[in-house]
Image (cartoon, rainbow, N blue to C red):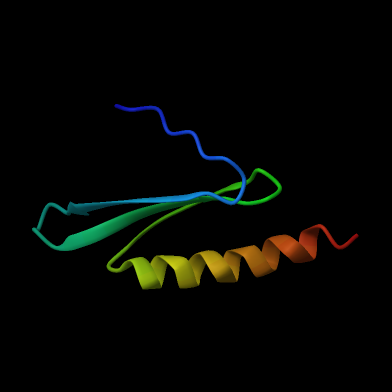
Length: 64
């Protein structure tokens, strides 16, 4: 398996089919603070929306 390196602010997604043949997206994003977000969704838009929600919660952690 290929090693995955992302710079802060980078995203990467790969398309695949699950065991039932349903198309899916494996999405990974590296935040500006170096934390990784990973998810598997049906569409890239859905994955990016989940990532944006995750980023909002991460920003709250760095306000202190």
